[in-house]
Image 1: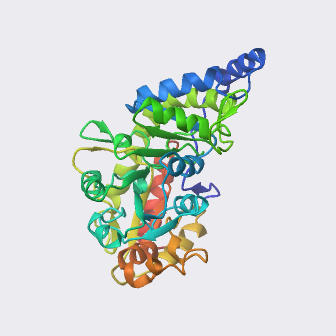
Image 2: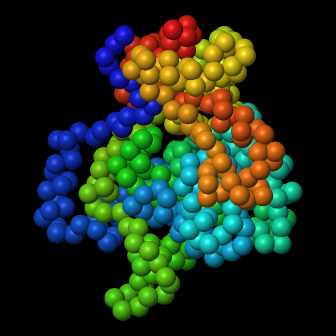
Image 3: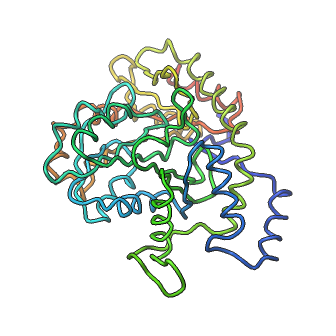
Amino acid sequence: MSSKQITVTSPLLPSLDDFIPMLRDIWDRKWLTNNGHYHKELEKALAGYLGVNYISLFTNGTLPLITALQALRISGEVITTPYSFVATTHSIWWNGLKPVFVDIEEETGNIDPEKIEAAITPRTTAIMPVHVYGTPCNTKRIQEIADVYGLKVIYDAAHAFGVKVNGESVLNAGDMSTLSFHATKVYNTVEGGALICHDEATKKRIDYLKNFGFAGETTVVAPGINSKMDEIRSAYGLLNLKQVDSAIANRKATAEHYRTALKDVPGVRMLKDIEGVQHNYAYFPIFIDEKAYGMSRDDLYMKLQEHDIFGRRYFYPLISTFSAYKGLESANPKNLPIAHKLAEQVLCLPMFAGLDEESTNRVIDVVRNKR
């Protein structure tokens, strides 16, 4: 057993030699936050790279979700998925709204559009789907439903940095999309996030809301919050943007290695690539059928740890099983059979830009041989 630990994610760090001059420049400018030089540069650079018109930077990936609901003045009920990170549903709760869970697609892990209409009530005002593992939702069908019922659509795109469908950024779908720039993501600013919208007036409202609602030195136009990104993380983000393409290429090579090596292992299912989608290879989940594999997901999870390989059961447990939400009618397991199935089967294997072939082979060996 090697003493080298392998985890699910690990950030690819920019060169310190490049970062130090930027830190000195920030020091010389004496402008540390509040829409500074590097903040403006990063918003411009990200809009160009991602192919979006308007983007607002945030200090983490949760606050854009909270702010999106505020900016669109959402009320009542929001239809969402139980198969996500808790921040998705927490953002709904923090706005005093009621989350309504619907089941997911087994093939993608994304919200099942055909389950949405049955969950709509007179109090429903929005849908909050998640592009799980960076795999795009069926945005066309979701938008058709939203248009019929007059609903807003906010995509939690935390995993979907740089993902495109037929050459178009998936971030342009719906009314808004949010991103996370946490250190474990494909692209990171250590901590950070962003909110994407489609017009200048909405961006202005978002920027007011993320800065206490200030529209001037003495004018507050809304009960906003403090969620601005500082100059140091903005500078870091500019450097990271220069290497994100190579990071995604490295991730793709690892994903292809996993896929080839594990395709014939009984009881191991992998997500299929979707035609026309430019993936970012944010995660590499496998789903364990205990009967066919001969070992439970949890047993494999522990077996990997014995070899200093630390996978992640992501997403397990379901949001709908947590104490804050399990009392909701929509959280009844009978309503969410596919979500419960995937949560019990999923195991994300290590996936990051610096994962070398030797380490990947160690992971594959344990999964294939179960020893």
